[in-house]
Length: 368
Image (cartoon, rainbow, N blue to C red; front, side, top):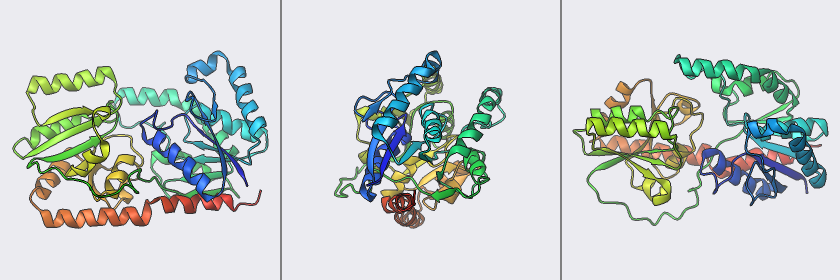
């Protein structure tokens, strides 16, 4: 049995993030297809190996210690493959470097790259200037990688800069994979709320890159409809959260509210929603939208990342377009049903766990 070391900075249920849920699901699927799997975390005591590393700054204080600790994990486990979830995480870079050093096949499971500016605002331009110092390292890690799993191998979007760089490597294997819903196998005998008010649901942490300010603008523009906008979060940036609440209170907006994910059931929230919405400026392949599709829920989103490839929703180029389509769909049950049917079909064909298994089996069959 081939041995695989799966490395990620985030794991569910401790980290309730897209990356955290994907890492935990990938562990299960790697085992299902026939790998022996051991897991490595930054700072999760329930994983097989725990670096007890807090982040990049912590690493800089004692890089030799953490490199030796990581190398010790590799020498003790003796993996045939080292797979890392995403780049720009410190822990991924450490293990790709050590895989190259120890002549072990390395795998990058890409979740996108965040270097180029999201838009022309000065704070994003400054951020990108800082991240340009990472580019030479990114090129090294990409060249060191043997197998690259991409959400969209043909993308020319800046969020897929890593796949564009990897495709310049000759005789290296690139495999398309997808994200999947944790609700795929949930029994569907649920009770749907009979509330007359429709719910537009946004799932994710509260932060300026998630752009919840546009949801407040949306709430203002559709106040005359029986629609509530619900923001379901598990983490937040305090300053930005306070800013949002201040805007809502100052304008006395009453059709938008926040709910901590710990105080509810995300499955029931999705089931009882009318549609999901994504106004982020950074997303690549939002897990919450895929999960909604698996439950026959459509999404409205801005056109970012891979979302123009999804058939389970409608992408928009402006808030004005999004508002127009919400009003158009509001009383059109026939069109809504068509979209919901397309969402579920798209999930089953392109985003189910079986698709991930097919991708991972290609790795298993590689001759070392």
